[in-house]
Structures are given as structure tokens and as C-alpha cells.
Image (cartoon, rainbow, N blue to C red):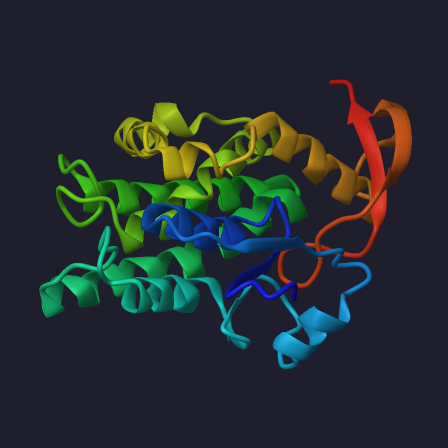
Length: 250
């Protein structure tokens, strides 16, 4: 591992990996980044996460920590002398964990329905997704951040989905900002933080990646394909084996 004390195994479009990168940036932690080809998993990834075989994995002093929210909590507890990510009050800390868990269970799973279902089911999925975002918007309310005045754990759990919003909107033909203006205002506020702005990829780059993945899976009308090049992509809950890069015209 090149002797680095902190190593991150990750894949650039992963909203889960982005959480870890933001937390490390907030703490000012130097680390070695190892991009993973999830169509051809590295021996290191298989060794460090033999149960799920997924990214992200943080390796600290040779010991692996898996699952993004667990990793963020580990980072906060281990490097606790700077930029606390968890609230100090136990009850507020429990609420932050609740909202992060809500994001994991609701946002990602429901967003998948937008790109996998059709017809009436697709329309219902859009409505469900918007209602979930409205619940999150209600929690933020008039506060700058999820749990109050400070950027922290719950914000990190959700903000990495922001770079995927353009993809969800394009596929679903709706506007998240129109439906949830305060949520988008919160996201833009988070983007003013260097840790977030330097971590989240451009939204249209994410969209291009998504189209590449969908084309490999056969869910894109090939009449729209203008160019095909080799590419490697997501797998597991998020990404699948190597696919093709395509440019789409609508």
C-alpha cells in the first residue's frame, strides 16, 4: 500500500465514496487514493472487504473499515481534534444518525426506481422520490444545515447525492429545485465548502457516466448513440461490470 497510513479504495462516481472523501477533507487528513475497477476487483479490495466486496473501504494503519456512514463516524472519532462532524449532544447525535440512515434507506433505493421503472410505476416512483426529499427539506427547515448551525454527519450523508440530481431530473423530467427549493438552497450552501465542491464531480459528467452504464445494460435506445468507446463502470448496489461509453442526443 505504499506505506501510507491512510488509504481509500473508491470509485469516482460513487455517492458513498464521496462521503468519505468529504469527511477526510473536513479533517485535513492526507491519504492515498486508490481508484478501483469494479469490473475487475483488485486483490486489495477483496482482501480488505471480503464480505461485501464493495467500495468505499478506508484502510487506516493496515486495518480496513467498510460502509460509508461507519467510515465517516470512524474518521470523526479518530481525528477528533478538528472539525467535529457529529453533534456533541447525545440526543442530537442520535437524530443525525437517524437522518443519515433515512437517506441510506430511502433516497438511493427510491432513486433507482426512477431509472428502472416505466409508465405509471415510473410516475409513482417520481412522486415517492419527491416526497422523500420534501421530508428531508422539512428537517432542514430554516436552519443552515441538517442539525443546526454546523455542517456535519447528516449533511455529508445526503449532499453527495446532489451531483446525481441532474441525472434523476433528466430521467424523470421534473425539477427538484421547483419541488424543494429549500433543499437545493441547502445543497448550494454545502457546495460553498471546499471539502464538498472539490469532491463532487460535475453533474453532467455523472449523467454521461449513467448513460454509459444504462447502455451496457440495454436500457437506452441505440438510435441515440453517437459514439462508443471502451469504459469501466460501477457494480454491486451501485455499479456494474465494464460497459461502453456513449454520447446521447435527445
